[in-house]
Length: 103
Image (cartoon, rainbow, N blue to C red; front, side):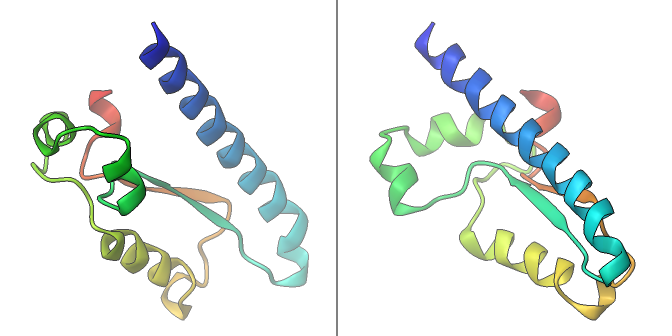
């Protein structure tokens, strides 16, 4: 039951961030400020390692077959802050190897 509660809290936090990002984007757009949020999937970091999940457990639910690397998230964010995304605002970019629809 505790794992379910943690997943529910994580989902609620991501939904709140998504909604906040959309509202902030609408508010700041007249000033030429773009706002976008990201929802990362399971990413291998020292913090994730400390949680004690095995690589096999983490990888099992990811359609692309591997957990993310911090560089995967950084590349997505670098697009969002670049001029290539100059007409992107109020959106959430999911960077999770296809995991979200599976959860």
